[in-house]
Amino acid sequence: MLPIVVNEEQIFTFSFWLNGSVRSGMSHEGELYCRLASFSIQKRPRVYQLGCKLTQQQTAIVLSSSAATCSLWGSLRDPSMKRILLTADTSKLLETMLLPQTKAYSGDQD
Image (cartoon, rainbow, N blue to C red):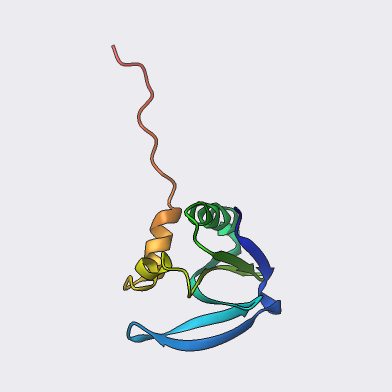
């Protein structure tokens, strides 16, 4: 399963209250989504990979992009989104998930 990819200029956005703060939401094909985080367009390949990882866990994800930014959106009806949406700083959590993992030392050891 792959994330849905849409042009940000073609989505309907709205604001709503969740967990003590105003969040961005959008409607796409009859489903409601919450913006998990926005990133610079240079990070789009890594954001897409993260979206793929989340959809492999049966999480409904949309990736939207414009000329300068891209965003990850999670379905508001998806039970697995609850943990992510209730995290105090969703953007920071996702930024951490985007960091390249360090490789173990592979040099010769005698």
